[in-house]
Image 1: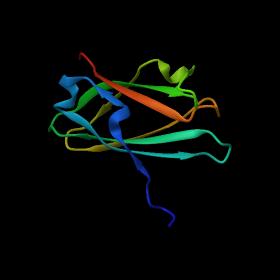
Image 2 (image 1 turned 90 degrees about the horizontal axis):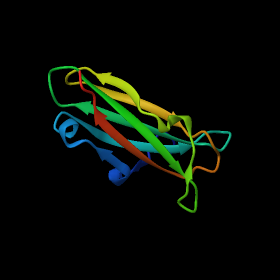
Image 3 (image 1 turned 30 degrees about the horizontal axis):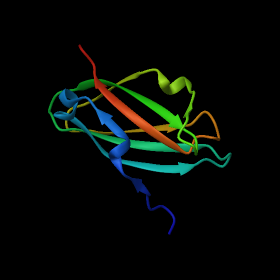
Image 4 (image 1 turned 45 degrees about the vertical axis):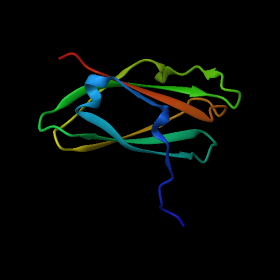
Length: 109
């Protein structure tokens, strides 16, 4: 059926233990664009009542497990309000990318 998210295992998510106490990944949905590029949608939830800042990085891998270089390999800062869910969509920069790893790190404010 259309419209039902295909949630993938979060074993590909590496989270800073300090951040994990406050913000966690609710789920990851993956799909392909019409042009054949892998895309992921990540939902984060802030368990606290205060805004939290963090950075994320996505690494993309080809079918042989080799890293596919990407501008998204640098850390991207973001923040999430207390008690809120935030969704981020990221598209691979190469059609060779078939898998990914997301790493999250708490920002030092």
